[in-house]
Image 1 (cartoon, rainbow, N blue to C red):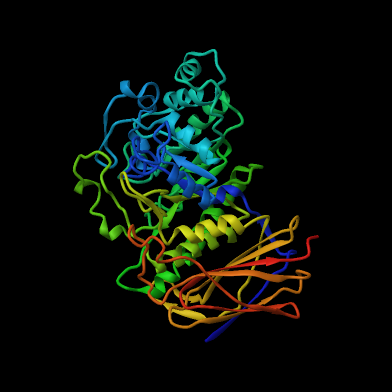
Image 2: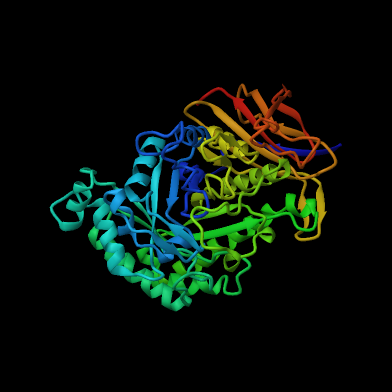
Length: 502
């Protein structure tokens, strides 16, 4: 057994935890929409065809914002196809995922679903095959009260009140050659700036997200952000980041340590954005939107060209195990550890397609292992993120070199006196004794210690055994302002603390 130490002190405030950190993503891809969130005729479907069982699970997850309709899908999407009577909507070819798109689920259904979920919408506009004019038309349809052709069309289609969408993505992954309408950094920076300027002229209360690199591995990473932001810095509020990770060649140690790569990615984008701010002498401090992140076994996907033209195919439906869930928990820790700059984060995706929720057509829905770290973090991370500096031994990894044996983040809500510590033991073979100095939190007591771990790191939840992997409770004790707990090998942990409120 190894030892680690952490000090929790409310004076070490990092930043307020934005509820938008607990976002998700629904793209017209595979079964994310059709037989995922939407399935008319399902026993649990409501009058609009929305699966209420999936809605219930999304509420349990604590999903705060949902990005839509893509993703790669948006770069060839005609938003007009998804409004008006369903029987008159056209069927189109989706070039992103080589799928047949019926448009039965469109803007009105998405907004109805969002409202029933109690989350915030986050819309993406097509800057691939379309441009400024179409972005403005979509914004007017969504947000203008009435009295114009487009706003009156929304009213005629059954939505008298504006959708009041505040968050808008200016395209998706425009640095990627796989994207419909892929652009150079200079080309994209110009169209983002002009689109943002025009959209603000129509509605000056919206917030805009510029496309950053679609991965830290991209050959243009860094130079892309610099060139784009030099042209559109004052028109946007966020720059996006996307990252997916997977276990490679059985290298468990590197997989458990992969959140250090996410940390570096965030730090580098922050530095780049701040350098542009300095050069342009802007008074605005840009925030980050990590609007695609997850574990995704991309080696198992043959690429878009391997797909046949089908309607809502089973596509990239990864079955997540205990190890995946622990790693997902470490990414949530990374988000909390950068709460001063990361204001939005969306786990991709919600249902079926690399999703924490799985469904069967006409059948049940269930929680994958990665559901639990997200749900418990969203539930307990409240108030301010605290700066924590774990003192722990190092673990050698092939991909990232030496990494700390523990990844940790903490939150504290002064109004309620509630605190939470989130921790991952990256050591896959040894438990870790964690000592937490709580002297700066008067009257601190451990309420619960929940852990996601298993002797079988490959254990999964399935339709026949949906509760094979669930969090369990462990014990710990506080003595003289010091908390001592044991973190099992390869585990995600959350310690819920009660204190004397200020």
